[in-house]
Length: 393
Ligand SMILES: [Zn+2]
Image 1 (cartoon, rainbow, N blue to C red):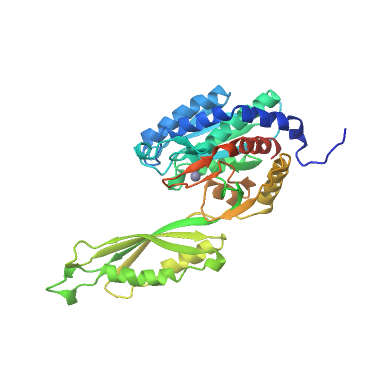
Image 2 (cartoon, rainbow, N blue to C red):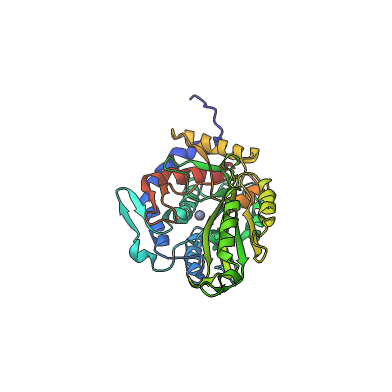
C-alpha cells in the first residue's frame, strides 16, 4: 500500500464512502431544499420566519441536535443547534446560515419552486436555503460515516441576515469566539463554485435635506428646494467613488417633494456604501458627515453608518481555504476562491479574527432575482466539502 501525503488524513478512509452516501441521497437533499423554499420567510414577517425556524427545529432534532431559540421581539427568532461530541475534546466548529429571504409573501405564486434542466429554481433557493440543507445532509453523512460526529458542531441560523443581522449579531459573535473556525453557507461565487475568502464591508446612510416650501408659481423666489440641494449633494457624493481602492457609494433610492407646483421642502437619498479595507470605514464616514449645504437655507441631516466591516483575507482565512482545497483535491476538484462585494455574517466573525470561510453553500445564479436557481449536480460535492471541513477545521 502506498501512503499518500495529504492535508486531510482523518477524512481519507471515509471519503469515497461519504461521497457515495451523499450521491445516493441526492434526491432527499433536493426534497429538503424544496421543503425549505416552499415555506416563505421574508425577513420582515416575524410569523413567517418563526414558522420556518420551527420546521427546521424538527429536522435538526431528528439528527440529535439540541435546539434553542434566541427570541427577538422585532425580528424572527434565531435558532441555535448544538451537536455535542462527548468523545472529542476539540473546540466546536460554527456553521452559519440564515433562513430569512428578501422575497415578500406570495412570491412563490409567480416564482414557483421547480426543477428545470438540472436546476432547482425558487425564491431563496440559492440564498440560502440550499445552504441550510447542505448543513443537514453533511451532518447526516458524517454521522453515517463515523457513527457519530468527529467533533462538536454548533449551527446558528439567523432570522435577519438580509436586513443587517441586528438581532442576531451579538449571538453570532459570542458563538464564534468559542469556535475553532466559522463556515458560512452563503452561496458560492459564480458557477464555478468558488468559496469566498474576502468580502467587502457594507454600510447604509440616509441623507435628509430640509428646504423651504413655496408656491412654484406665485412665490418661486421664496422657496429653497430640498430637491435641488439634494441633487447637488449627490454630485459630491458620486465623487467619493474610488473603484481602484475598492470603495463605492450608490445613492440607490431618492425621494422628495410633494407636487410639481411646490418648491420641495424635503428630499432624501439612501446611499449604499462598500469598502474593501476596515480603515476605509472611518474615512468615508467622515467625508459624508462633512457635507455642507450649497444653499444656506437648506439643512442636511445624515444618519446610518457602516454595518459590516470587510472580511479581509487574513492568514486564518487563507489557512482554511487551503484545507478546503486539499479536501476538494481528493475528488479531483480544483476549488477556487473569490473576493466579492456583498457582505454576510462572515464579515462579523472574520472581523474578530476567527478563521472564517464563506460561500460554502449552493452553486447557482440570480440571488434576490426572479431567476434564482441552484445547479443540482453540484450538491453532493458541496455537502462533502462541508463534511470534510467540519472534521478538519
Ligand atoms: Zn445570504
